[in-house]
Length: 269
Length: 177
Image 1 (cartoon, chains in turn blue, orange):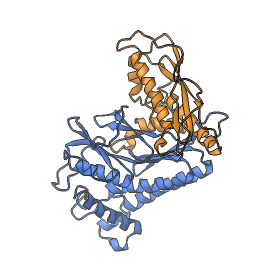
Image 2: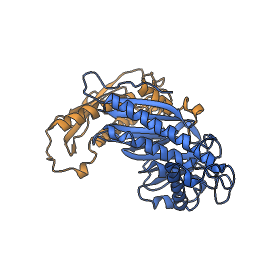
Image 3: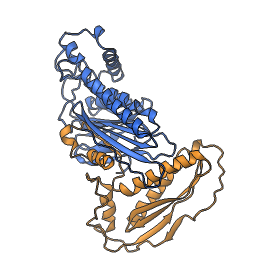
Image 4: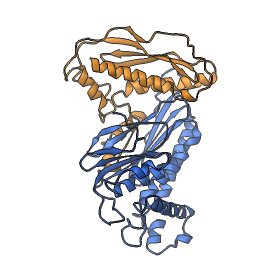
């Protein structure tokens, strides 16, 4: 499902063209928006490469595909040492994520069974960040949204901010507020869309204290990991996020209570 | 109507803020600007009679909530006042790294219908490039999407099923044509 581009620039103006593309990858809607003076052909190539990057990640990591490397590792058919370098990179990142979150993000304890590894919670942000990097050379502002997790950047010094609405988990048709960002990432984890799907690795119980957690920061990979970890930790204070340079968090409790780190700059919608 | 005033004043402030980004890191731009227009109301007047929750105040409120339809801003609001009033306001002059910037905002019945930069950097090719790109985008953002003024939405994993009904889908469609 790919939509064609549409020029928004006014007649007679040199540029200011904005385009959007969408495609379904990993069972998720993925949107790319570009705005700026970029060459149309170069844009098409870069967006195709970004989508291809996500599809490659899906082929390597999907736990729903029996032929993926992760499925083969879990079935004992493939040794980690013999796997694709990208698989080894991701498993290394999963280990770092486990350490960074004090075990709240543990790819080895959220899998379908003991001993299996499920890096899905990290792969989406990792792959989306890599895909967005392929848009960086265009000279355009870019915005990539993979199922609600966003990587974005502004190139021109006077370019308007990207304005990102943060969904209200109690009513997905409404917003909690808006983030105005020029670079970096926004990731939201929660139980709103698919029911309780995050397990507290420490207790093994489904994490239900929070409805959603949104994290902003320079890296989508880590923003996504941290958002998942905030959910897994339930109602725990967010001080540990505030202690990470460049990252801020917002949590919505089951009773609707909002908590956030001091630097989480949510504006009224 | 007072609420409307705040709404557009904050919009003017936001637009000026966009232009003044990085001012603090700016170089030695001269602080003296050629005054293209005095800040404040140029023509028209603010309706002094405050309207209860239903009137244009509600219009502002409705405008702030996300409506999952790309055509929402062009659809007439049922709560809009029948009387049309036009107001033209100059923003204050913002000193930016590239020179002074000032915008003029036109409001019709409380909604922004036009934004023009009446003063902006024109010193070199780079300025022209930035202006030719940023000004139309600002214009589009302010006018076409003032209801939500959103580029995207972050939420817990959006499934394919939910996507078609989501605000993100509307935003994608608005730009994909």
